[in-house]
Length: 210
Ligand code: C5P
Image (cartoon, rainbow, N blue to C red; front, side, top):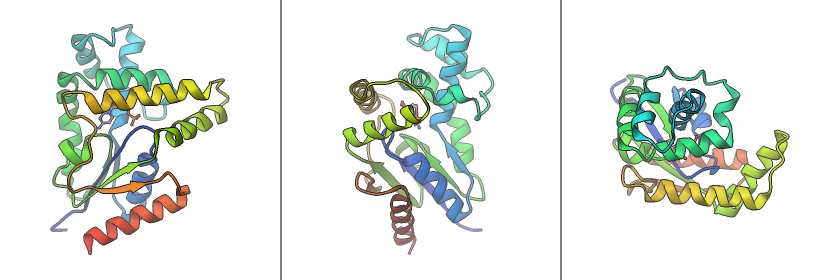
């Protein structure tokens, strides 16, 4: 193929970007990378080894550990998400993970990447960029429902505070903050079902490629 299809899906926590990115990959027959899993993997390696999430030096050391297998259930835990958000503010951590993401984006087959800087830093040349979002209350409600469904005992207010803190940290960091790329298409999933969000995403990409 002369022009491989590259799709970048950005957006804040619990916006539905992962589900949408996986569905786009299946629809267009492309490989998919969840870039947040790289940061989560580093965070989990750091926690298991007893490293300090406030130390850039130790976080960079954790980048050198092999990736945690993607089916490890701890990768999706709230504490790992929290530490991933903290260490992702370190430029040296971002730099250590850049090559792997750039290689994935550069595959001849094309690709779908999701994560907070994929449309702005990792794949600014993507053919189609989506910025998937929803109000913070709706995103917190989704995360709360997920946690309850997993049998966790949580309070909605705590989940809301965590999501707000994650948004604030991801949006205000100096290196690769969460921002909508100028040429990204906004998809608000707040009032959409999962199937409706996926259909809307496919329609937006089709329209961009037309
Ligand atoms: O998307 P997910 O919640 O799995 O990502 C965990 C954390 O990793 C995010 O809060 C964000 O701080 C960081 N991240 C990032 N850049 C990406 C993907 C994730 O900084 N491309």
